[in-house]
Image 1: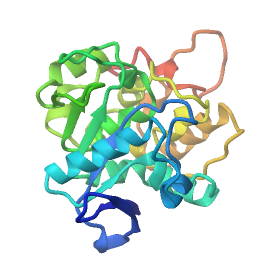
Image 2: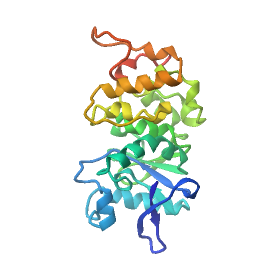
Image 3: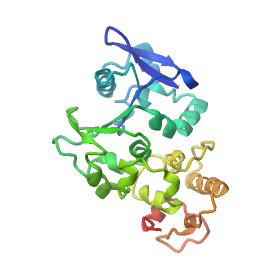
Length: 264
């Protein structure tokens, strides 16, 4: 796992840690701006990304981690070398565990300017932020000005009303195995991703699945995810989906087909 280490002078740099050597760390959850705004791994390594808008998020995460007594933090934009397909695949398959193991997750709501979290924040609509919300034990929300809005425990009812995720998942960190496949799919039903394949890949950790990434496969990614789920469970709620058209078949092509399955 690649992390950013906070140095004694307040600067930070990339380090790699593995297994039992991974130290306590904070982790950032955010929605991406344009790719030109975000700081890549290469730009973090060579120091050329400091003028980018996305660098502010990295600085904030490091500063807040230090205030919370942590020497390390993780930001997806610059801690993964996305030019390496092997590294990207490993990272996406590990993402849920990384968020789950973090001491604290800082959720940055870039479109919220008030001190009250707005339910219409884009953060609540994205596919990747589902696991980033439910995996960490502690999530702290911040608005555009980096003002603290509260934790997911403080705002549990608000978040539940917005996302449909049960409060006991948000507050009690319940084992996800106590929820049906269809219920978990329903949490992702209205969420969007930039690439169609990511509607499946962002759910790998939620279902405890590890599988190769094949960008370009389109809706087949979600078919493959369901096939992998069938290998580890006999939960027939996987077939409770409803199509908005008359398409046949046993498996859905999108989480949106599970939009009415919150109580299945």
